[in-house]
Image 1: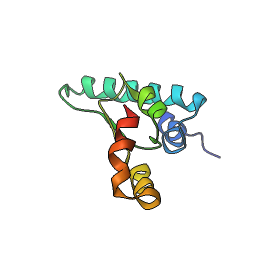
Image 2 (image 1 turned 30 degrees about the vertical axis):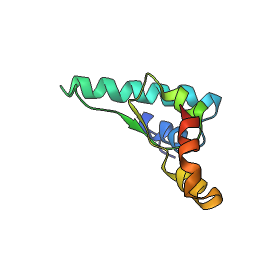
Image 3 (image 1 turned 135 degrees about the vertical axis):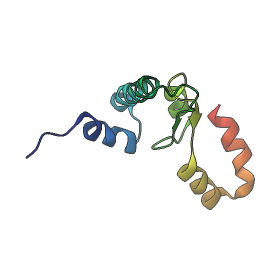
Image 4 (image 1 turned 45 degrees about the vertical axis):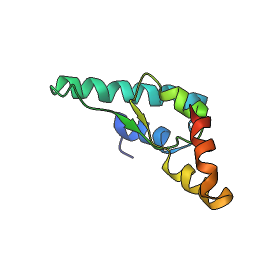
Length: 95
């Protein structure tokens, strides 16, 4: 079996629920990506993270490492389970 690249090893951590061990990998991956962009001369780019971001704790994990938290699937789940009127409270709860 071929050895996986760093990117391939980190990918599952970005796709799975961000539990404690995966949080460190996520922060590492974000820092790595930002450094890569700077090396390419790209400095005015907003870095967004959306895989596995579902809660206030997840948003806090990426704070300072990414500029934008995308909470798409969880927002849809909230709408499906509680209706559109639940969204403002859900979003406030992420801050």
